[in-house]
Image 1 (cartoon, rainbow, N blue to C red):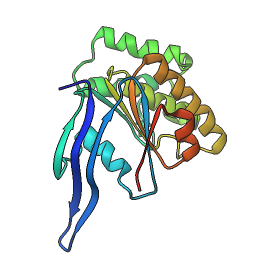
Image 2 (image 1 turned 180 degrees about the vertical axis):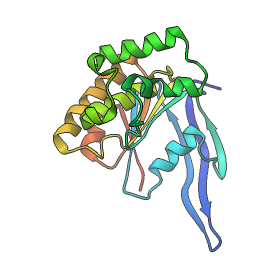
Image 3 (image 1 turned 135 degrees about the vertical axis):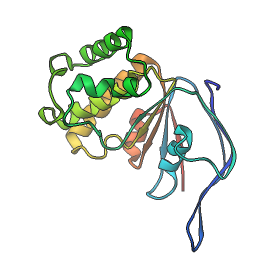
Length: 202
């Protein structure tokens, strides 16, 4: 696998018993390393489909996708497990990948301490604000040390003031760790504020 993310003549269609729905056609793009690239466009234009193609959740109908093999994914909702502590939520990806080493556990704790969650490691998700939950969700994606981070409208469930604060926090964390990031949003202001590059889908 390459550390470069590249789409070459990628098509994506979905099928049901009645018809074929073409979502993406002939997409070719090379994503710049160590940058935040935002994909913006209206609902249904294929933004989340691009993330699903990158993550491998779906396969392209046509074309080639070159990508890193270690990818972190932060979803629209935080998807935290309410019965697990914050630390255990952050460690869940490492458990799934069977990489729950002492070094990785310590790295998870370092991230939680560094990004303002030191006093909440033993807390449960329902004890945290929406913004803090999103920060936990990001750290869970980062603890696997991804080469590429995917963010699927991660601020859309937050109120406007919290959205501004959390997006600023997450921007600083990503820049601090120098991780190549693909952000999907429909908010043009968010795209302008957070991005090094913007891709517009119609």
